[in-house]
Image (cartoon, rainbow, N blue to C red; front, side):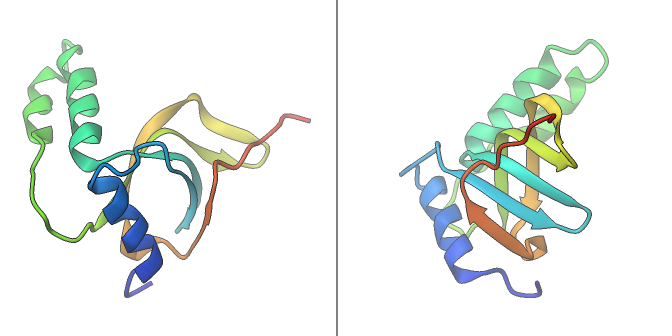
Length: 118
């Protein structure tokens, strides 16, 4: 998409304004289907920084994830407890942290798509 879907931008803005950090969403982006819950950018950055700080080798990168605050229109979706769907598997099993550019989303649906190994 060259211009992000206005409805998806509105959902992202609501998450950013902290109306909800439990919104489940599934998106299609080039090469992947990602499913999980959206988080406000500041919270997402804080959690990523925590993981990096706990690493002996990656701790110095935590400073790159300093939350920025502002009233700008969202440009990205921030997923936590998210999985990339690949066939009948979700990668990683426990969920990960993904940042997706709104302009890269070609399709989406409300909800966390389940998967099974049957």
